[in-house]
Length: 131
Ligand SMILES: [Zn+2]
Ligand SMILES: [Zn+2]
Image (cartoon, rainbow, N blue to C red; front, side, top):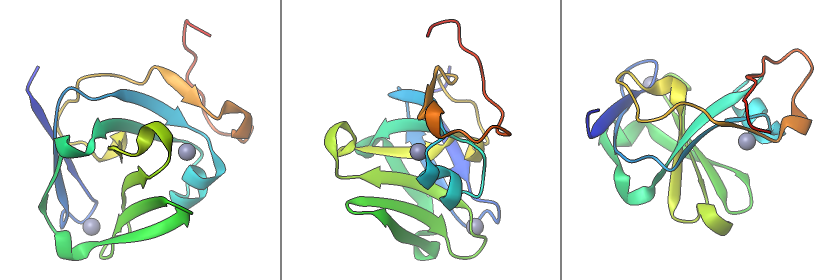
């Protein structure tokens, strides 16, 4: 397994490099993720902030404060959602990136469904062996 991976927005203007190990990988069905990404589910892979490096396109990246203390980054050229950051709780030192942006392999697969009670009935859901 390589030690790093690369994520890119749709237009390629923004490139992000992460260093493994990641902290978690999860499908999120919360209303905020679904609406900001215009999707039924958003799959996240989480890292410590220090493990994430913006290698290209800083001038294209903007923040949207989706709730108090929580910011979501996006590319102003193509609209791709790039990252989730929150000052709250365990997440304060982390940056979460959409798994869909990775163009090289990452170190883990999704293991959990977050906020499954907020899942719309039409959204696909991965079943896991554990509860
Ligand atoms: Zn872009
Ligand atoms: Zn969410």
